[in-house]
Length: 242
Image (tube, rainbow, N blue to C red; front, top):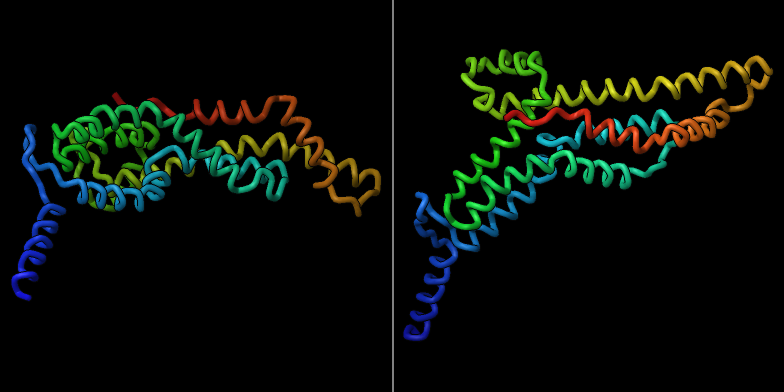
């Protein structure tokens, strides 16, 4: 019985060692086994929603599209799934240059096992920082650096993520609300005109929202609203820092 159990135990130990195996690479550091890489990828996928929300153009886009739906006065049209899907694809479009740089400087060398995982992670963060810094106002950066009591940095890329992330999100919220205000103005004018006409005609029991909705749709279609909004949104993002 012990003769049978011993080889099984040795095989299990060898399997465990194989699962946790690392090997040195030419660029310095270590390359992890496929199992550890898969575990790291699964962990990264769980963090993907937070990364999309806090480090990309998604926040500004989805807020503006939500405000557009409210300005039109349509409760659930387009539905949330359509708005989120449209925001995701427009985010990938806006982030394409940044993602290409991440793939070139971090992902491809790591897949080729020329750099370790730690170096790949550092290289992947830099392009994201460049994008976020280009959209972040200096006043927001100063606010959170003062709150965190962070000493002045020598270069913008030296800004810690703990300061850059809230600064970026604050700037994105302000920009999204500013764009939303500009979107609301023409539809608000239509609401006021329709309400005034109904009151002057004594039709106070008629809902102004129901009467104004076709005129809002007509205006939105005549100015090619979707192309105008999506194009303006994509153009509202500054180019990443060099």
